[in-house]
Length: 205
Image 1: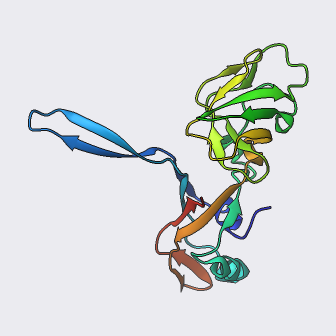
Image 2 (image 1 turned 45 degrees about the vertical axis):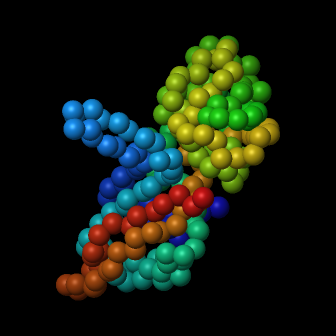
């Protein structure tokens, strides 16, 4: 179930998504560059709302998101009508949210069922979103997974405990986030609202 933060996603004019590793680099005197992973790889969403909508329309929405503020974990999905392409499932399984997997360790899971008799095509395509269970973390697939393959490689180490899971796929994935940057808003002109900057949502771990 999503929270009031979903209204920010649904009304966004731009969404920037970051999920790369945090990396520290050093440059030696001879120009040699060394990079060290600092871990992390959490999701972050920077979301801009439009300037100019009616304040009277946004008034309820403002109270709801300000009640969550920068301390409460909320839920969002990338499933807004007209923007489903951001997280759409690109594989060929008719009911992808029925796929089951086993997780042991690392950044891979093993498909155990739920393919519905698939005999060609792909279970997952690179970039597909999957979530382990209904409340787990969200990952992206880093290699195409053919219909007869069983191993799915994910973009980061799995955070869930070892075990069996049914996955959420694509727009069905739910992100737990905290709003770490909450812009100020201003009423201007007649019944119009504008924002001082973007909302920034960070994955809650």
